Length: 80
Image (cartoon, rainbow, N blue to C red; front, side, top):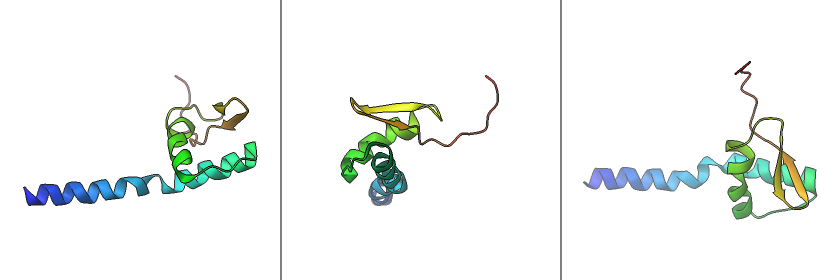
């Protein structure tokens, strides 16, 4: 039981770092494309829409005045 709890604790502590590079990329994209700085927390909340649930090359609406190009890399898959 202690081993399971220890492993779980380690995994939980690593989760915030999993998106560290993506958070910085979101912040850079917002500065470049919207001339807007955001906190780490706000950038973390945008990782899903700008990386995970968008189609590469499309514009993603961040708010009423800002659209950012999807940051997900193109996988190179051809056709459907």
